Amino acid sequence: MPAPTLPRWARRAVTVPAALAAPWALGAAAPGAVPVAVARDLADGDGRMWRTRAYAMALAYAGAEAGGLAASGVLWAASGPEGTGSARSQGWHHDLQRAWVASIATAGRALLDLRIEAEGLDDLGEGPLVVLGRHASLPDAFLPAELFAVRAGRRLRMVVKRDLEWVPCLDVVGHRLPNAFVDRAPSSASEAAEALAGVAAGMDAEDVAVIFPEGTYPSPAARERALARLAERQPRLRARAEGLRHLLPPRPAGTLALLDAAPRADVAILGHVGLEHLSSLARLARSLPLRHPVRARLWRVDRSEVPRGRAARVEWLWERWEALDTWVDRELAARPGGREVAAAR
Image 1 (tube, rainbow, N blue to C red):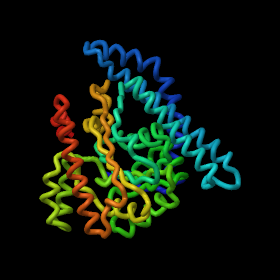
Image 2: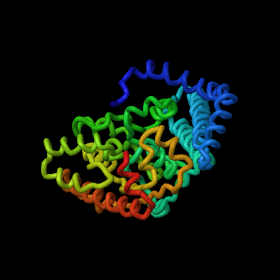
Image 3: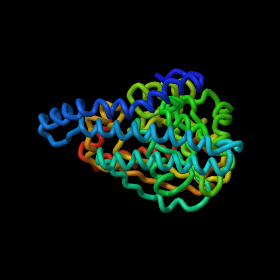
Image 4: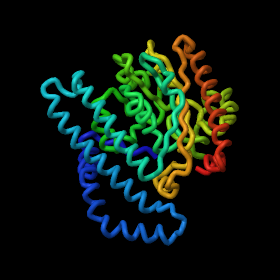
């Protein structure tokens, strides 16, 4: 169920103090909690030390959140009368976003054995880019930030679920940058166009706008809802949706609105495997350390290859999604138990 919508001030009155206090609370609890976690991990005898790793990662993440919020306050003050919308302040906030993601990724590599192998990142060329990404689990919203902002040094714009406003740094810094926090599925094309106009506005050669066409990550319940929706509204697509083994059917409204709002941008399809089993924090903790690397693959599509007209673009999106589903299935088949892990959501 989506998190309740509150006025921004009311939400931040809860989340910001909690985020600033969290590293102190976890640090204060560490002398008692860490020895217990280590003892229980050693008693397991499997060498994974998942409880100790999870606690250390929670502390590292809490530190990144608190540090990011403190830095955002400094940047707000430094922005002066021009405000955070000035070009100078926008550059600072993109740098802060990049540093925040890099700090979390560094902790993930050290504590969780997180390894991300990316193919196609160097072949994206120049110019603005719209990225259509697979959404497989909770952590993969961070994957585009690691790939594009940290590794490629591009300026990232994202369309993400409104639920993520409850992550304080994403809320504060994200609202100062040209991002969109949207409902899981726009109720109409006009609503999608209005929400995404700001994401695409003024995109230049360094900008990358990311959207997840599925709207949420797969689960049995999400799949049933998607099939029921198609049966009611677009019955001819239901059979195609049933043929998708790992992806949910794309919801085109947001994608088409973003493409319309960024007419000069080329497109890239972002696929990945290795995060399917991390659909909850509990499953993430019990999967530590991560046994296999995350494999990401990008396919660039020249804008001239994207058809005009809504019906043609919907068909193009479905064809791309079916091809991506085939790639995911092939990659999972190459991993020991990969398909079984993906199915056990």
